[in-house]
Length: 81
Image (cartoon, rainbow, N blue to C red; front, side, top):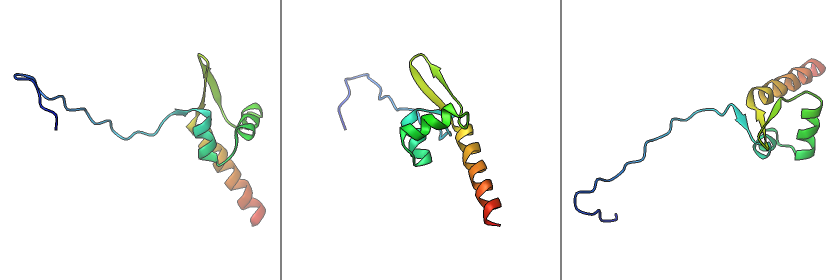
C-alpha cells in the first residue's frame, strides 16, 4: 500500500451499484444478440430495434433488444406448436 504524506487522508472510491444499462453501443448490442453489425443495422433499418444518435455515437435501447428477442421466441413457439 502506498504511503501517504503526513496529514493526507486516503481516498476510498465509492462503489457503483449494479444497474442494467438503458442503452448500449452497437458492438455490445451485437454481443447481446449474437449477431454481426450488418445484421444489427438491418434490424435497425427494418424498425425491429430502436436506436438514435447522440452526437456521433449510435445508441441502441436495451428494451427494444429485449422486445425483439421476445417477439422472435413467441413466433418460434407458434410455429413449433
